[in-house]
Image (cartoon, rainbow, N blue to C red):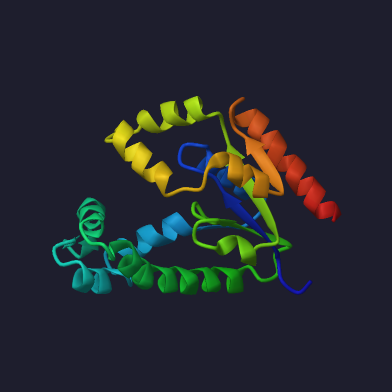
Length: 197
C-alpha cells in the first residue's frame, strides 16, 4: 500500500471522541481533526470567512465567523445547512488533502470526523473506530457543558446517526465509560491489531 491506512474515528457528541483522538496522537498516529479545521477556516484570515459573510450577512464580526450568529442564520433558512456545507466542505477537503500529503509516509492516519457516516465519509476510510458510552453518561457529560440545554442536545442528536447503528457499522468500538486508562488500553489494542494486518 503506498498510502497510509486510513482510520475513520467517529462518535456522537459527548462520547469521548476528542479524548480518544488525543490517545491515537499520543501513541504516534497523526490525527486530522476536521472540527479544528473548521475553527481555523472560521477564524481571522480563514478562507471561509468571506464566503460565509456573503451567504449569511451579519454572521461575521471582527473578521471572524460568529458561530452563534451563524447557527441561528443557518437554522432560519430552509437551505441553510446545504448552503453552509457547499462553502465549508470543499475547504475542509483541501485542508485534509494538504495534511495527507504531509503525512503520506505514515503507516496510519486517523481522520477524526464527527459526522463520518452522516456526511458519507465512511466510504473513503479503511477502518472505522466508533467511540461510545451509555446514553445516560453521554447526556450527563454534554449537559455539563456551558450553554448546553436538553433542547440543544436533542437537536444535535437528531442530526446524528444513532449510537447503536454506528456501533453496528464499526470495525472497532472504544467504550469510554470506564475511564481514560481503560479507553487507552482499547486504543493500544486496536493499533496492535492493525499493525499485524
